[in-house]
Structures are given as structure tokens and as C-alpha cells.
Length: 61
Image (tube, rainbow, N blue to C red):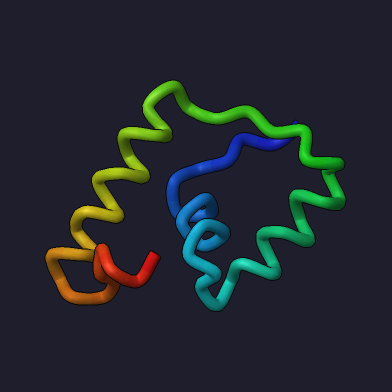
């Protein structure tokens, strides 16, 4: 089992450059993951910051 952190989750969610590497690693672990209780809140915070900085937009979907 592996602990999924916010940066790895963001890579996967947004298909960023390291997403395939993260996915391969998780697949090697048979997707047996644990996550911090606040992971969803941390992800939302990162997404909000990316939108505010202009990296992503709400319209991109």
C-alpha cells in the first residue's frame, strides 16, 4: 500500500507531465492506496490556486 499525496493526485487529475509515471507506480501497487484525510481539501486548494494563476480555467472542463 502506498500513501497518495496531493502532488501525485494533481498530476493524475490534470494529466500533467508526471501523470504517466505516477499511474505506472500505482498500477504496480495494484492501486492499493491510502490518502490523508484532508486530501480532497488540499486538491481543491491547489485547483483554486491554479485557476487564480491562470494555469487552468473553469471553462476547460
